[in-house]
Image (cartoon, rainbow, N blue to C red; front, side):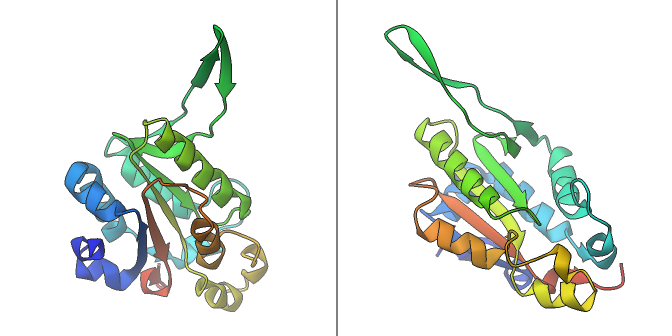
Length: 196
């Protein structure tokens, strides 16, 4: 039902899944952030030139998404969480969120080790339980893109053991984020622009 809140043209270009009514929560309680995300996805093109860019550092693909959100006041955020027991603070380490605004976290996992999904989901769970995050968004690539990477001679750079949809879903299904509402966004061939 929440998927109906996402415009049809975006549902044709991206794959969306949600857990715990994330879309409804975001659209009603965080409408500005929801609009930011929709505008970001609408402007996104998976450029052939970005896929062919050599590795080493952050890819132009997540940089484009982070850059768009940054212009709309999203920012990297690290949380300093401690629990005090008998007046002794015990730190609870969390990982930074790449894009954070008003209790919404967005992570872009383009071509990392699959353990990054575990890190993101666990981070979302902990921050949700601590009541500082209302929902988490993960944007990642659809597994169907492997055929494109192979055709472009980049298949070895984007192997089966890196972050893609078929690796994410089992981690979500096994409860990696606990009760934290999740919006999952997959980018695939419908986003590809071979002329760029």
